[in-house]
Length: 345
Image (cartoon, rainbow, N blue to C red):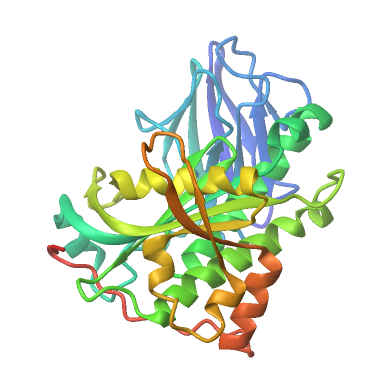
């Protein structure tokens, strides 16, 4: 039994099934180019199409690199990294692939609500107007990086970044809502009473952890230097829905609160900031010691908004100092988030 790999792929070909053991590493790139670990002779497959990664927990994830023709898991297009389970059917281009794993580790269920209620209850709520905080993180100068790096190396580095950022967001009580190109969006849902200061500190610690992880990525992959990110953080009401199944819930939020978070992230570039948060987000921490010393107000015009918008911005260094001031030990105290059955303002 020791010679049997923990996981393997069965790839359907005109001459039969091709057996591909997932051994000799923790990630396997898939694409049409010869430099991939798994090469598919399929004209509908991108040169660097996707990747399978194994986590330390024993879970396997499939990540599509924004391929032109997409990847499909059990007939549904993959837009974010998804956990694989034994027997999962993948379609890449016109190629059919079956994933198998011994002693399959089911993916850890995570409710986006940060509450204590079960996922089964959460999946019953199809559309709820909730008070949420939206986090948007975008890699700076990604286009320049793409021109400098070999495509295979870039795919591995960005795939690793996606995975690590997703783990950080999960550790701080949420889940990734969307992977969009070189950006990540996550949502925290607050109860009707609104977030406490400790809740907001937890969101800011998420930002700080993502910045540290991003800055250290060049030690894991031969990048030209440290990567940088810009972050938008906004709080407000939005419609939150579940478009998935009970086994695999897929939550998302829509509305102006989400749109503004993306505009805030974009504003960090023009204003020379690392983090930009909306006025409503800052209102939950404005009474904390030295908040107005570490965060400064900016009034600017954002794309899609007729009137100037006031935001609060800072650098990652100032964010670190602010967090040290309010929790010198650097702990991650949990807040009191609940998943509401309905809220109103």
